Length: 210
Image (cartoon, rainbow, N blue to C red):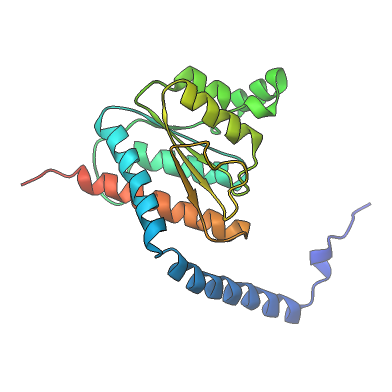
């Protein structure tokens, strides 16, 4: 027996209206966010985190990136841009997304519990001089919190990206960046914006000097 999804019964008028509505709401939210993201104290915090990312790579360190769900997708994207490029061609740089290996994630989750899926990655790959970028929109993801603790214990620098409240992240990383929103899609979009800015900076700084 085939169960009809509720989406199947949506009328064409409803589809047209809701699709347009969600785009409009997103644009309106971004207009508000854009102003909030220009707040001087937040700009300085984001720039300071970006400098830490660049200095890690300048010194020969590696960038580790972690996140769950949509944040895992962003983490994978960010790591790939350090290994590849963002806007300008350059030599590859060392970066890894700790969520990229399904084998490792499921093995560790099965044997040790999901809270440790990123801890093991930090412990196996992280070295003093490296940096962990950890993303949690709520700031309450146990796997992210534990990874940050493990990174600090191993002497890694740490950057945490989260939403307005920050959950349990404040004080858990060297740099804790709060998106001024409590709506997950907007938070993740800003995390990508900030990460793209850092990747672009790395590309520009990697160009030959005249």
